[in-house]
Amino acid sequence: MAVRVMIVDDSPFSRTLIAETLTEGGFEIAGEADSLESALKTYEEVQPDLVTMDIAMPEHDGFEVSRALLRHDPKAKIILSSSMKDEETEMEAKRIGVSGYVQKPLEAETLFTIIEKVLSPDTLFQELMDRGLETFKEALAQNLTRMAKTPVEFIEDADIEEPYRSKGVTTVIGIIGQYTGTMIMDLAFEDAEKIAETLLRRPAKDREEVLAMVAELANIVGGIACSMLNKREKSLGLRVSPPSMFHGNSAELVSPRVKIQKSLARTQYGEIFLGIGFKKGSTLWM
Amino acid sequence: MDVNAINPILASFTEVLPLLGFSQVTKKKVSLAGSTLAYDGILLNVAVVGSIKGVLLLGMSFEDAKKFASKMMMGMEVLELDSLAQSAISEMTNMVCANACTQFSKADIGGLDISPPTLMMGTGGMATLPVPQAIIIDFDCDGIEVKLYVGLA
Image (cartoon, each protein chain N blue to C red):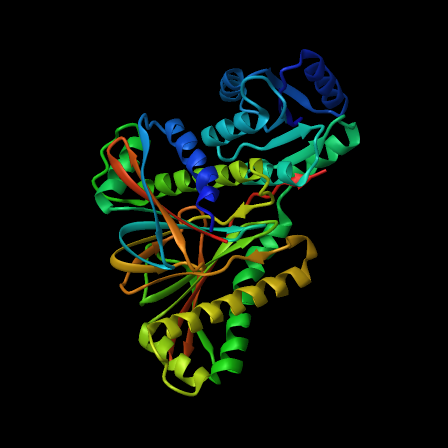
């Protein structure tokens, strides 16, 4: 069965041109729209497999129409087209969650290639999901063993039970790159104090010193794990944010937009929770 | 951090919330705080990486979070901050932060990307941001109090 495409472009000439190109390539034109309102209405009616979207349109641009379509159907596959090709346009496309981006004038072969890629299973993401948690565990084990001289044993791998209840000191690190994600490290304050004492070879001066040690450990683990993943697959381009810390109580923690895989590291100082999650949806850029 | 640098965030917040059904979004107060802040209720953490780095946090009391989620769900009664309500508020936070990156790019601070939001829920908790100083913006959104903590450097 032919792939059904909906074309969103305010120019009838452009729509005709894209429709002809796609028809020649064996695609079916499921519908056409020239504005935000008509795009939402047509999408609902024809339920296309894919949408091509012009960026420059009067009233609502392609970004706004894409946002509205994705709000309506988060699974919508949208390929943006524009004569502009710069970093900021790419970032905006990524933040919105469109599937692909192709530069105008549209070349048939480029358009067909990107459609094929957008509709095929995302193997890179699958690999990241398969390998992600293991890599972060390896980074945690290596660094804890090296820094705090403790053997590390992992006792549990499972999807996180939501909500997770913090043991006392939670570090959250954002991950940016081809895919975005989150790393969560959590441990009891008393255990963090013991690790800090080993690292400093004296008791920590105050609470801040303990928290700073935990932040540094999480930062190292996140940074090293992302480097290991990038080394294996360059196109991931993962980078970590500086850590945020939550402490002083036993808060509940959830990650509504990302499924978190978890593991518990058992050390001589106590248990350390490690949670990793990545969000599907990267933008192909051609 | 320069207080003027919050303008893209203010613009984003006041642009996105009306799209979610809020009619009156008012900035009540802007204040400075250190890196450690107390919170009671919910706190959403979104990391920012790019030419500026850090974190944006959005906080509400439990009661206000329920009211906020109800408003987003067209007045549907929200008795508990369940997964649907958590998802709605996370979605809003994601939209505000993504839009803030767009507003930053208009001010020539480009190449920013954000992490998915993580939601903390608890009473008497503390948050330590990865910057020496944070800016707190208090908003009133149709009678619901929302705090936005900006920790970017």
